Every structure is written in structure tokens, then in C-alpha cells.
Image (cartoon, rainbow, N blue to C red; front, side):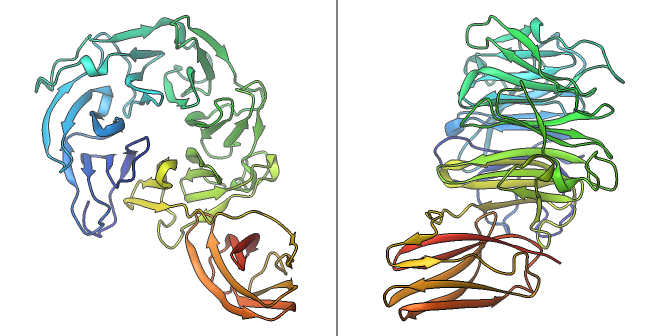
Length: 441
């Protein structure tokens, strides 16, 4: 937004969902409204969408509408063409709704972008007729078209503060389930969305922290029963994971916390996100000290790796979103702008032995200065070895050439690598093997 002067404080970020490959972004900023860009060129200025404190925003599939909000829950429908020109807007938040958060969450139903769910204090509101709301050029008058308060979603008053809803999410895999959480730590599941016979279920585990609020929820878009939740505060266990829709939970904060009970100097977690495509699953945690990532959740022993420290830095990460179709991941920070990358699909199978070769594992592992890998060839072969980070960005090609039959060895320097997890891809005569290794300080 400011052409390289990295101070922009994003609260939110949105990309177009679905089967598209574009660089359209929209984000809400503290004190600086909402902005959008139609290009991935970092040297081109963004376009001002609206004023105020920019809050939650969304782009409907096929760009049929853009949705923008500012402080206190006021929400608007925009008509924006593919050149970024604003053709009109109208206010759409429901009359009668109260107790909005300052930065108030809403989502579009990922299975039907004509439906919106919005939080308002202790309630969820649903609009299933977004396309019927006309663009009137009226930014002052809210609309009753399509809105229904879901009375069954009411949150009860327990804990250290009024239980206003602070986080909300749905899976593209199931339009009948919605997960939500509150500022006093409640965690709830609402079912019956498809037929309007709503049922609320408390899915908070007794092991989840008190004195922390639910800062984000992410349900897998492949399996609605797989959910990642973050609780935000210092000195609490921060990240929890379920594969059965909330019946059981495990703490997967791992090394994000200094000590296993959450105490110590670990960061506060603002946002969690699950990225899944046909070949990869990555778990993200946006924290007050930067971006962390893992490809394997393992309870208390989960190892989160700090990602892009020299690019994103150790600034707070406010929100993370992705689009599996073009492997696009976007990270919004509160103080250093927005970053995007593409997960590289290296189309590999984790095999140890084939008929014409065998590949060992890197050693030492972890490593701090140099690392080695042995492999055996039955025949003279073409060999290429490349190193990727956990986001799929290629770090370097360490070998490419012809090798004779017999035992061979690769050795390369990692002293200039940032500490974290890496993927070595060894391609032998067009067949690839992957091996993970860890670089430590």
C-alpha cells in the first residue's frame, strides 16, 4: 500500500475463493480503511475501497460482490469491476443487531457465497439472500433483506467477561456445521444450518485455558470434523486440534510455548489456518512474534518452525488465508504489510527403495553447518537434488548431473540457512524421493 515503507497494520485479508488463479486481494487496516489490489505487483499502489477502521472483508466467488466492514460491525456490499473501479455500494448489516465487536467477524458460507454469517454480541445472524440486496449507493441505512437472527446460537454468561462471539468458521466439506467461540473462552458448534433446525453444542474441553479468548477457528475444507482452534493470551496453552468435530481435543501448542503448561515467554496466537490440497497439508499459526508452520501435529510434541523471519519478520501476524486451486497463501501482518507465496507441488512419493536405486536419510539431522546424504544406483543415472522450505519455495539446487552406478554421496552447506524444517527432493531418472531435515541455530 505504501510502496515499500513497511508499516501498514492489517487486521484482515481476503482472497477470491474457488477455482481461480489471480492476485486479487482485499484487506482491512487499523485507522486506514479497507484497500484492494487486482495485481500481484508489489510496486503498484493499492486502491482505497472505503474509509474508517478497516475490518473483516470477503470476496464472493467469481467476484460477483465484495463485502467490506468497518469498526463496530457496519458492513457493506460493493460492486467492483476487474480493473478495481468501484461502481457502487450499499450498507447491508442487519437492523436490530447489537453489541458488535470493534473488529467484528463475518464469513461467507464456503459452499454458497450467497449466504453470510455474522456475529453480533451473543448471537449469530444469517443472511441467505445476499444477491437480492440491491446496490443503492446508500452507506447509512442497514437492510432487513435476507437476515435472520439465529436464537439458538445465544451464548450464556459464564467466565470473566460477557460472552460475545469472537471467532467463526465453516468447512467447505459440510454446509450444515458452523464452529464459533467467544471472548470468555467458550467453544461451540452449531448444526442444522441446511434445514434451519439449529442445535447448539458445547465442545469446549476442560483442558482448554481460562483467562483467554478464542481468537480464531479453522475447519478443514476437506473434512469438517478436523478443526484447529487458537486461544489468545500469554502464558496459556494456545492451539488445540480435533479430528472428531470437537468430541475430543489435544493440545498441539508444542514448542510455541516455553513450558508445556503454556507458562513462560511463548507468543500469543492470533490466528490459525489449515492449508490442504491434493498432495500437501500445512498448519499455520500467526502469532505476536511472527509466522509459524508445521506439516505434522503431534500433541504436546508438535514442532512449529518460524517461517520467513527475514521477510515477514517478528511482527504480529493478524490473519492467514489460502486458495488450494492455485496453491496461494496470503499472510497479513499488523505492522509490516501483506505477503503471499505459492506452495510448490513437487509431485513426489516418499519411497525408500526402487528397483534401480536406494536413497538414505540426511545426516546429521538436525544439522547446523553441513549435511550429507548417501544413495545407491544400480545403473548410471541422471540425478538432481533440490532443497525447499516448508512453504514449497526452492532454496537451492545442490546437485544436477550424471552419476555412475554404485554408492554415491551428496554433501552441502546449511550454515547460511534460517533455522527450521526443509525438504530435500532427490530426482533420479525422473523419479523423485523426498527427505526432511532440520537446521538448528
